[in-house]
Length: 178
Length: 178
Image (cartoon, rainbow over all chains, first blue to last red; front, side, top):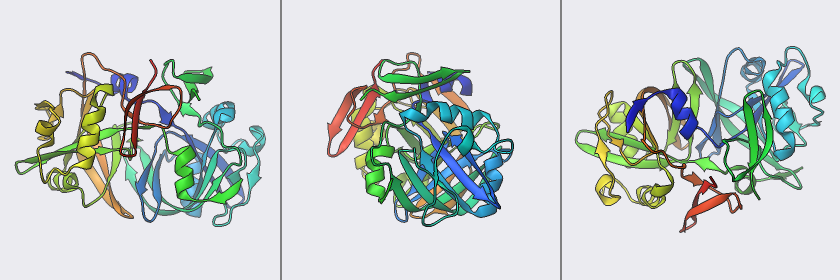
């Protein structure tokens, strides 16, 4: 064992990471922010947490509305994930730009994404600053599943066990071989 | 898309999940608590968060000491992960029981685990209750890497892209095919 640094940890300890889209709507504006930084935090009630940079457009929509939909992209949404992660919702409607279908939920204003493997309607239950990000704790109010859920889109390493979905601009997305 | 439940979400959206061990020491007692519920929360300073149930022995050691080591088990530590996750540190020293080597760190009292792929020495920077768990925010003070880091031990689904490491008592651990 030797003393190392965070960047080298990333090469051995950071992947695979499931990707989730934080989808939020507030005062007539909506956006989608792909995240790797998410975790379950409670079994009963069911809760998750996400960590979002304050400069993200979606951050303001989550904080302003007190709600978020956590939408899980499948293997067909790697390009959409890249687009939503590299453009700002200040400049474009990501649903239109990525040809996604917004569907109304039952518990929150933010839309569900019909093409995703799963959608979780959430209410923000608490938040705290953690360094350069805001940690939002989300209570899961409703769960929606796709009729034919495909494999999840993951941030991956170069390993034989994945089908590579996208390899562009330093991003490598894949799905575990079925 | 149809309204569903959390249990069914788990079948399509919960894995793969990297496993991390929360290692803590306080007032002469130490323990290891395997977790799937962890995420990065900040890039600068580097921070992570973990979610730990209050009834876990390790919870008291983290809260009491204000420190934790996040140790990342590799493919050779699936059995040790199962042991550490199914026994309580109140009853046994998990380092001895799982034949693990404790090594002193440089920043915190809690020991590093020599056999792990990586160890992160962390100071607890904040905490909040999230439902039935406590969310600890951890500032990463030091990073240690194994000289020959193997593949990470993951909580997995039954897919072709993994080598199964352990399949016992409802737990399925694996590593992505190299």
